[in-house]
Image 1 (spheres, rainbow over the protein chains, first blue to last red):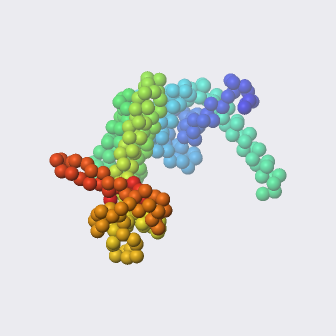
Image 2 (image 1 turned 90 degrees about the vertical axis):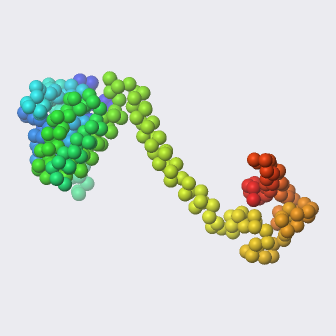
Image 3 (image 1 turned 180 degrees about the vertical axis):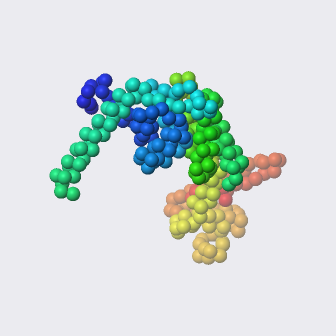
Amino acid sequence: MNRPGGRAGQDVLRRVGEASVLILISLADVPKHGYALTQDIKELADVELGPGTLYGALDRLERLGLIESLPAESRRHPYRITAAGAAALRVHLDALERVSAAGRLRLRLGGI
Amino acid sequence: MDDFRATRLVETALRCYPVRWRRRHGDEAAELAALLIRDGTPAGSIACSYLAGAAREWLTPRPGRPLSTVACALLAAACALGVSAGLLAPAAPAKAARPTSTSHARGPEHCRSGSPERPGSPERPGSPERPGSPERPGSPERPGSPGPTSVVIPVNNRTRVIIREPAHGRPC
């Protein structure tokens, strides 16, 4: 299926799972380490990420080049979103927005 | 659960991860678990999360890990399931052999000739009561069916006679 924006604008986050998207959103403003990420995501989306899920998603995002780890502070590794990660997040959020707008429009048309 | 036991539980779960992962995230993961336990998250759920993560880590193909390793891990899991199923299986044939209908109930019963359950049934040839009786072609039970066949097999310097019934093909 062709997506707006072509290959460069391809939504690479479509198949990475909700946890990865939430992590990227959480890292969009400032770098955070694991515990800060779980707390922020809990506040932001009311989702409690299990630590196993968190590290799985962090590994995946790092492999995709969407985040990078910064030098360790004591035992903690802070993570930072990369330029590619920010672009991918923007594309994904735009896609979500389009779907969300279409859904709302159809609800209005249906009179529900 | 006290702190020591909770820490031990989480450390055990973390040991399930590949070494590469533990070198990379081990310390941080242990610290994160300690912080979450301090916040009131049950140690059991943290350990479960790490165990699930470890399983995913082993089963996900990585550039540095050949696909055969993943296949071996899957095969080991399948074997473990197979052994478990095999241990449960011996109970199943016993349940299946239990007489539930009249046609199945005849199977085990006809081995006992002259039993009280079947008072009106005709005596069968070859039974201990009439050892020398002739074969019964066209008997009322199974017209045209061959009679029982006996096989003499020497077992440990003793002769064993096995009578086979054509109804189920098993020795009586």
